[in-house]
Amino acid sequence: MDDEELRRSAALEDRHWWYAGRRALVRRLMRGVPAGRAIDVGPGPGGNAAVLRELGWAVTGVELTEMGARLCARRGVPVVRGDATRLPIADGRVDLVLSTDVWEHIEDHDAVAAESFRTLRPGGRLVVAVPAGKSMWSGHDVALGHVRRYERQELLDLVESHGFVVHDIASWNVLLRPVAKLRRAYGNDAATDEGRSEMEAVAAPINAGLRAAIAIESLLPVDRLPGLSLVVRAFRP
Image 1: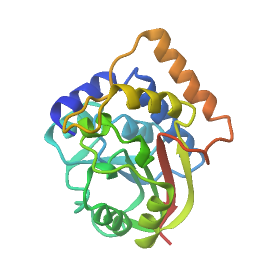
Image 2 (image 1 turned 45 degrees about the vertical axis):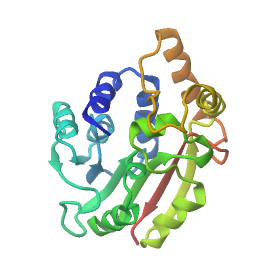
Image 3 (image 1 turned 30 degrees about the vertical axis):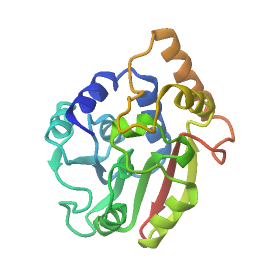
């Protein structure tokens, strides 16, 4: 993700429905988990790292870009510059590796999974969210610098092949997937070398409605249906 997109993300993060929903997801996934030492790999503007800090975690962001590191630090989250394929963390040092919407940017995602495993202590947890569904590929992915979208079995195989035991894998943003699919089919041409990000400000009533849809989804048994994202929780045995 380039500097312009990072600035856009930072400007939207506090109020935009998608970022708010993702922070709520992190809170829900970490409910009841004893706090410890965590790294947020690719924190960008730092919203999710800030959620972990609020939950009592000693969290450090590991961010590749200078812009992302600066934006994360503005939230008061400690951050170090580092590559997800070569994490600047000693073996077995952390209790949680969180990475949301990062793995899809990296060609060598096997290295990222291996590094996540290496840095976790035995019993430590992995939480990863990625965009789902190859059929959803569009100019939005091109604009954000994605190299892939994931299918459920592909993500499971990747995580398990590097020694993790999967606790669960769930879809997220299920209710809004048909809307996104329609929009991408007719308004964002993935056949070109350029694209347009869908991460943009929306009118307040629409933003509230979309936030409500995400909140309602969390109460429904829909996490096995196709969604816009996949979230895997696993641990190092």
